[in-house]
Image 1 (cartoon, rainbow, N blue to C red):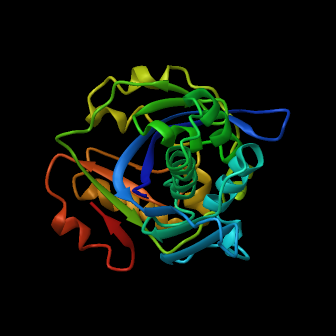
Image 2 (image 1 turned 180 degrees about the vertical axis):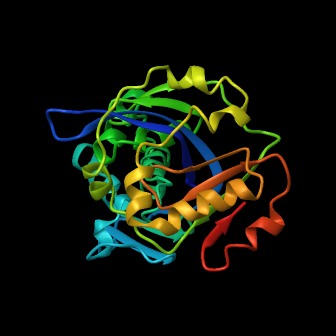
Length: 272
Protein backbone atom coordinates (compact mmCIF):
# COMPACT_ATOMS: atom_id res chain seq x y z
CA UNK A 1 0.00 0.00 0.00
CA UNK A 2 1.42 3.36 -1.05
CA UNK A 3 0.15 6.64 0.39
CA UNK A 4 1.26 10.25 -0.01
CA UNK A 5 1.35 12.16 3.30
CA UNK A 6 1.00 15.90 2.56
CA UNK A 7 2.59 18.93 4.16
CA UNK A 8 0.63 21.79 5.70
CA UNK A 9 1.08 25.49 6.22
CA UNK A 10 -0.22 27.52 9.14
CA UNK A 11 -2.27 30.58 8.29
CA UNK A 12 -2.08 32.64 11.45
CA UNK A 13 -0.68 31.19 14.67
CA UNK A 14 -1.33 32.66 18.10
CA UNK A 15 0.19 31.35 21.32
CA UNK A 16 -2.76 31.88 23.64
CA UNK A 17 -1.55 30.60 27.01
CA UNK A 18 0.79 28.17 28.71
CA UNK A 19 -0.92 25.11 30.11
CA UNK A 20 -0.37 23.43 33.45
CA UNK A 21 1.10 20.40 31.63
CA UNK A 22 3.87 22.53 30.13
CA UNK A 23 2.36 22.68 26.65
CA UNK A 24 0.73 25.77 25.11
CA UNK A 25 -2.76 26.44 23.88
CA UNK A 26 -2.72 27.87 20.38
CA UNK A 27 -5.07 29.13 17.71
CA UNK A 28 -4.16 28.47 14.09
CA UNK A 29 -5.55 27.38 10.76
CA UNK A 30 -3.99 24.32 9.20
CA UNK A 31 -4.06 24.31 5.41
CA UNK A 32 -2.87 21.26 3.40
CA UNK A 33 -0.62 21.73 0.38
CA UNK A 34 0.36 19.32 -2.39
CA UNK A 35 3.98 18.85 -1.32
CA UNK A 36 4.10 15.29 0.00
CA UNK A 37 6.20 12.34 1.10
CA UNK A 38 5.71 8.82 -0.23
CA UNK A 39 4.91 6.07 2.27
CA UNK A 40 4.84 2.35 1.52
CA UNK A 41 3.39 -0.02 4.13
CA UNK A 42 3.34 -3.75 3.36
CA UNK A 43 2.67 -6.91 5.35
CA UNK A 44 5.99 -8.69 5.87
CA UNK A 45 4.62 -12.21 6.30
CA UNK A 46 4.41 -14.46 9.33
CA UNK A 47 7.95 -15.80 8.81
CA UNK A 48 9.54 -12.34 8.85
CA UNK A 49 12.69 -12.16 10.97
CA UNK A 50 11.72 -8.75 12.39
CA UNK A 51 8.39 -7.40 13.59
CA UNK A 52 9.07 -4.07 11.91
CA UNK A 53 11.46 -3.22 9.11
CA UNK A 54 11.79 0.49 8.38
CA UNK A 55 13.81 2.15 5.64
CA UNK A 56 13.94 5.61 4.14
CA UNK A 57 15.53 7.67 1.43
CA UNK A 58 15.33 11.23 0.19
CA UNK A 59 15.85 13.89 2.86
CA UNK A 60 17.86 12.53 5.79
CA UNK A 61 15.82 11.84 8.93
CA UNK A 62 16.90 13.20 12.32
CA UNK A 63 17.31 11.09 15.43
CA UNK A 64 19.67 8.51 16.81
CA UNK A 65 18.11 5.68 14.81
CA UNK A 66 15.33 4.84 12.40
CA UNK A 67 13.01 3.77 15.22
CA UNK A 68 12.93 7.38 16.43
CA UNK A 69 10.83 8.01 13.33
CA UNK A 70 7.16 8.73 13.93
CA UNK A 71 6.11 6.06 11.42
CA UNK A 72 7.67 3.44 13.70
CA UNK A 73 6.12 5.02 16.78
CA UNK A 74 2.73 4.89 15.07
CA UNK A 75 3.21 1.18 14.38
CA UNK A 76 4.23 0.39 17.96
CA UNK A 77 1.33 2.45 19.33
CA UNK A 78 -1.22 0.44 17.35
CA UNK A 79 0.60 -2.83 17.93
CA UNK A 80 0.28 -2.42 21.71
CA UNK A 81 -3.51 -2.50 21.36
CA UNK A 82 -4.09 -4.49 18.17
CA UNK A 83 -1.17 -6.99 18.08
CA UNK A 84 -0.22 -6.26 14.49
CA UNK A 85 1.50 -8.70 12.11
CA UNK A 86 5.04 -7.88 10.96
CA UNK A 87 5.28 -5.03 8.45
CA UNK A 88 7.79 -3.35 6.18
CA UNK A 89 7.63 0.45 5.98
CA UNK A 90 9.52 2.56 3.50
CA UNK A 91 9.43 6.35 3.56
CA UNK A 92 10.64 8.56 0.74
CA UNK A 93 11.13 11.89 2.46
CA UNK A 94 10.46 15.00 0.35
CA UNK A 95 9.03 17.38 2.97
CA UNK A 96 11.84 19.34 4.70
CA UNK A 97 12.43 18.37 8.33
CA UNK A 98 12.13 20.89 11.18
CA UNK A 99 10.55 23.40 8.85
CA UNK A 100 7.08 23.98 10.30
CA UNK A 101 5.38 21.87 7.61
CA UNK A 102 4.21 18.95 9.75
CA UNK A 103 5.89 16.29 7.63
CA UNK A 104 6.65 13.92 10.49
CA UNK A 105 3.15 14.24 11.90
CA UNK A 106 1.68 13.60 8.46
CA UNK A 107 3.82 10.49 8.01
CA UNK A 108 2.64 9.19 11.40
CA UNK A 109 -1.02 9.87 10.66
CA UNK A 110 -0.79 8.14 7.29
CA UNK A 111 0.93 5.16 8.89
CA UNK A 112 -2.08 4.81 11.18
CA UNK A 113 -4.42 5.04 8.18
CA UNK A 114 -2.39 2.49 6.23
CA UNK A 115 -2.25 -0.03 9.07
CA UNK A 116 -5.96 0.38 9.79
CA UNK A 117 -6.80 -0.34 6.14
CA UNK A 118 -4.14 -2.97 5.44
CA UNK A 119 -5.12 -5.20 8.35
CA UNK A 120 -8.84 -4.27 8.34
CA UNK A 121 -8.69 -3.18 11.96
CA UNK A 122 -11.91 -1.16 11.58
CA UNK A 123 -10.76 1.43 14.09
CA UNK A 124 -13.38 4.21 14.03
CA UNK A 125 -12.36 7.78 13.21
CA UNK A 126 -12.77 9.01 16.77
CA UNK A 127 -10.45 6.36 18.19
CA UNK A 128 -7.92 6.80 15.38
CA UNK A 129 -7.90 10.51 16.18
CA UNK A 130 -7.01 9.70 19.80
CA UNK A 131 -4.12 7.53 18.64
CA UNK A 132 -2.91 10.33 16.37
CA UNK A 133 -3.05 12.92 19.15
CA UNK A 134 -0.75 10.75 21.27
CA UNK A 135 1.88 10.94 18.53
CA UNK A 136 1.84 14.70 18.01
CA UNK A 137 -0.32 17.75 18.52
CA UNK A 138 -1.02 18.24 14.81
CA UNK A 139 -1.17 14.56 13.78
CA UNK A 140 -4.95 14.39 13.94
CA UNK A 141 -5.28 17.11 11.31
CA UNK A 142 -3.62 14.90 8.70
CA UNK A 143 -6.15 12.10 9.15
CA UNK A 144 -8.64 14.25 7.25
CA UNK A 145 -6.38 16.70 5.39
CA UNK A 146 -8.91 19.49 4.98
CA UNK A 147 -8.51 23.10 6.17
CA UNK A 148 -9.20 23.24 9.90
CA UNK A 149 -9.14 25.71 12.78
CA UNK A 150 -6.92 24.23 15.47
CA UNK A 151 -7.15 25.07 19.18
CA UNK A 152 -5.87 23.46 22.36
CA UNK A 153 -2.42 22.08 21.52
CA UNK A 154 -3.51 22.09 17.89
CA UNK A 155 -5.37 18.82 18.40
CA UNK A 156 -8.88 20.26 18.77
CA UNK A 157 -10.03 20.71 15.19
CA UNK A 158 -12.96 22.50 13.63
CA UNK A 159 -13.53 22.36 9.86
CA UNK A 160 -13.21 25.74 8.17
CA UNK A 161 -14.37 26.87 4.77
CA UNK A 162 -11.22 28.22 3.15
CA UNK A 163 -9.87 27.82 -0.36
CA UNK A 164 -6.79 29.29 -1.99
CA UNK A 165 -7.67 27.94 -5.43
CA UNK A 166 -6.77 30.52 -8.04
CA UNK A 167 -3.71 31.60 -6.05
CA UNK A 168 -0.14 30.34 -6.36
CA UNK A 169 1.71 29.26 -3.20
CA UNK A 170 5.49 29.58 -3.22
CA UNK A 171 7.21 27.80 -0.33
CA UNK A 172 10.81 28.63 0.58
CA UNK A 173 12.78 26.66 3.16
CA UNK A 174 16.33 27.81 3.99
CA UNK A 175 18.92 25.29 5.28
CA UNK A 176 18.12 26.20 8.88
CA UNK A 177 16.66 23.95 11.59
CA UNK A 178 14.39 25.72 14.10
CA UNK A 179 13.80 23.85 17.35
CA UNK A 180 10.10 23.88 18.22
CA UNK A 181 10.91 23.77 21.93
CA UNK A 182 13.24 26.77 21.60
CA UNK A 183 10.65 28.65 19.56
CA UNK A 184 7.98 28.15 22.24
CA UNK A 185 10.42 29.20 24.97
CA UNK A 186 10.91 32.58 23.32
CA UNK A 187 7.30 33.71 22.88
CA UNK A 188 4.93 35.45 25.27
CA UNK A 189 1.35 34.13 25.16
CA UNK A 190 -1.37 36.55 24.05
CA UNK A 191 -5.03 36.30 23.14
CA UNK A 192 -6.41 37.48 19.82
CA UNK A 193 -8.86 40.34 19.83
CA UNK A 194 -10.73 38.72 16.95
CA UNK A 195 -11.59 35.14 16.01
CA UNK A 196 -9.03 33.90 13.46
CA UNK A 197 -11.56 32.17 11.15
CA UNK A 198 -13.43 35.49 10.94
CA UNK A 199 -10.24 37.33 9.97
CA UNK A 200 -9.67 34.83 7.17
CA UNK A 201 -13.03 35.63 5.63
CA UNK A 202 -11.57 38.97 4.49
CA UNK A 203 -9.75 39.16 1.13
CA UNK A 204 -6.30 37.56 1.21
CA UNK A 205 -4.74 40.95 0.47
CA UNK A 206 -5.98 42.18 3.88
CA UNK A 207 -4.41 39.33 5.88
CA UNK A 208 -1.05 41.09 5.85
CA UNK A 209 -2.38 43.61 8.38
CA UNK A 210 -4.46 41.27 10.57
CA UNK A 211 -3.17 37.67 10.47
CA UNK A 212 0.15 36.96 12.22
CA UNK A 213 2.39 34.14 13.36
CA UNK A 214 3.52 34.77 16.94
CA UNK A 215 6.74 32.80 16.42
CA UNK A 216 8.07 35.18 13.79
CA UNK A 217 9.46 37.89 16.07
CA UNK A 218 11.74 35.59 18.07
CA UNK A 219 12.64 33.27 15.17
CA UNK A 220 13.50 36.18 12.86
CA UNK A 221 15.68 37.65 15.61
CA UNK A 222 17.67 34.42 15.92
CA UNK A 223 17.60 33.55 12.21
CA UNK A 224 17.39 36.85 10.30
CA UNK A 225 17.70 35.03 6.97
CA UNK A 226 14.19 33.64 7.51
CA UNK A 227 12.80 37.13 8.00
CA UNK A 228 14.58 38.31 4.86
CA UNK A 229 12.82 35.61 2.84
CA UNK A 230 9.43 36.92 3.97
CA UNK A 231 10.43 40.49 3.07
CA UNK A 232 11.61 39.36 -0.37
CA UNK A 233 8.36 37.52 -1.06
CA UNK A 234 6.44 40.71 -0.33
CA UNK A 235 8.79 42.74 -2.52
CA UNK A 236 8.13 40.33 -5.37
CA UNK A 237 4.39 40.80 -5.11
CA UNK A 238 3.03 38.31 -2.59
CA UNK A 239 -0.45 39.27 -1.45
CA UNK A 240 0.30 37.50 1.84
CA UNK A 241 3.44 35.93 3.28
CA UNK A 242 4.15 34.19 6.57
CA UNK A 243 6.37 31.72 8.34
CA UNK A 244 4.70 28.33 8.76
CA UNK A 245 4.46 26.90 12.26
CA UNK A 246 7.62 27.54 14.25
CA UNK A 247 9.70 27.75 11.03
CA UNK A 248 11.89 27.64 9.12
CA UNK A 249 9.68 27.56 6.02
CA UNK A 250 8.14 30.76 4.70
CA UNK A 251 5.37 30.83 2.12
CA UNK A 252 4.03 33.52 -0.13
CA UNK A 253 0.56 33.58 -1.66
CA UNK A 254 0.61 35.15 -5.11
CA UNK A 255 -2.04 36.05 -7.65
CA UNK A 256 0.48 35.44 -10.45
CA UNK A 257 2.86 32.72 -11.62
CA UNK A 258 5.94 32.30 -9.43
CA UNK A 259 8.45 30.49 -11.68
CA UNK A 260 10.79 33.47 -11.98
CA UNK A 261 10.49 34.31 -8.28
CA UNK A 262 11.39 30.75 -7.29
CA UNK A 263 14.76 31.15 -9.02
CA UNK A 264 15.67 33.95 -6.60
CA UNK A 265 16.29 31.46 -3.76
CA UNK A 266 19.09 29.22 -5.12
CA UNK A 267 20.33 28.09 -1.70
CA UNK A 268 16.90 27.09 -0.39
CA UNK A 269 14.44 24.26 -0.87
CA UNK A 270 11.71 25.77 -3.03
CA UNK A 271 8.29 24.32 -3.83
CA UNK A 272 5.48 25.83 -5.85
